[in-house]
Amino acid sequence: MAQQPSGYLEGIQSVRDLPIENKRVFLRVDFNVPLDGGTITDDSRIREALPTIKHVLDRGARLVLASHLGRPKPGKTPGAGVSEETKKALTLEPAGARLAELLGVEVRLPEDCIGDAAKKVVYDLRAGQVCLLENLRFHAEEEKDDEAFAKQLAELADVYVDDAFGAVHRAHASVHALAKLYRERGCGFLLEKEIAALGKLVTGPETPYVAVLGGAKVSDKIAVVESLLQQANALLIGGAMANTFLAAKGVDMKASKIEGDKLALARTILEKARDRNVDVVLPVDVVVANSIEAREGKTCDVSAIPDGAMALDIGPKSVAEFAKRFRGAKTIFWNGPMGLFEKAPFAAGTFGLAKAMAESGAFTVVGGGDSAAAVHAAGGGLAAKMSHISTGGGASLELIEGKKLPGIEVLRTGAAPRAGQGG
Ligand code: ADP
Ligand code: MG
Image (cartoon, rainbow, N blue to C red; front, side):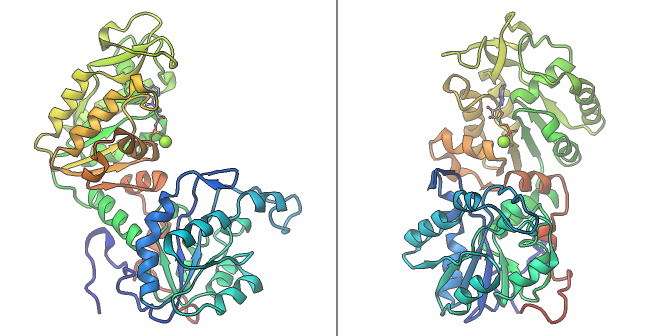
């Protein structure tokens, strides 16, 4: 028996230790790639799944890959499935073609993920061969965590492996009902890395633990703030989120985006932080402009925002204040850009923070889709210097919130499989 992992991974088998030789392996991946008229505009999700895919193939397994793609609308006739038009727009064919290129092997594509079409292709696979099932969401049962649908999927393989971190916060059939049917089930390398890194933040991060929050809205992040108040020693707030906190403290934010209905909530959060001795740090200066289309911004103290101007980034003094909190920190978690980083005049705060974080020497974790994009956009090799950049937006935040994620919990040894199904 392989050594059982501890911490948040406890009770979850790694694909490294599962008996997969000569077996048919169902591998749930996240091939939900951005498409522009049938062309993949960013294939990172496919490339990130390669280590697990290669491992499974090297061990002589027959590989059955499955993923969802987009949000196919249900067809007009109940039970009839999605329209031909939707099938064409959201087929996994381009993902299969890209995977075949990257792997240098043929990837077979059955026209459905269940039934005779799938079975025919899957049962013909030989050791080391690959097929990619068609979009799981072409069946409405996927999102309903439907057991009968899961049983049909289970007929295709002997071992279940999940490597789709971006999907584990949803109780959908391919990540939940299906996993339950298998005795031999576990996580792929990508999922394992996500659980290990993010799990550390919830099960006892090394202190001092500094959390940085930013992004567009306070309302998106309330649950995360609440849980960070329990865990972190310091909470640094930037981005549009900081506008609402500054306004709650009586600062005149002029034309800045604030959430007027969240001022009381922001005050409550600040009080709770004081009670728990959490050091909350807000920006002292900001980069302002009269429009988000402005070619350049102007830096000013938060107390001196000109009439008609809005805060679109944190200023250099704020970056320095935030960076000061990183010195000596053992753990840093960051979610949410410090400003409108997509526009060059308002990117310096976010990039400066990313640099300070990457160079801090702490265990550093970045979560959130836009935050991850910001670290990559910052360049300078910063992405490689972070301990972990999560690939799952919603899933990473829910994990940090301390929620039990259905697709992770179901993989634990304690969650007993039903008799007579799967491996
Ligand atoms: P993540 O995806 O990392 O969780 P969010 O989705 O919460 O992050 O927020 C990202 C968005 O917030 C970005 O598109 C960024 O432009 C925007 N944003 C951050 N600060 C500001 C600001 N001061 N004004 C306008 N937009 C902002
Ligand atoms: Mg986002």
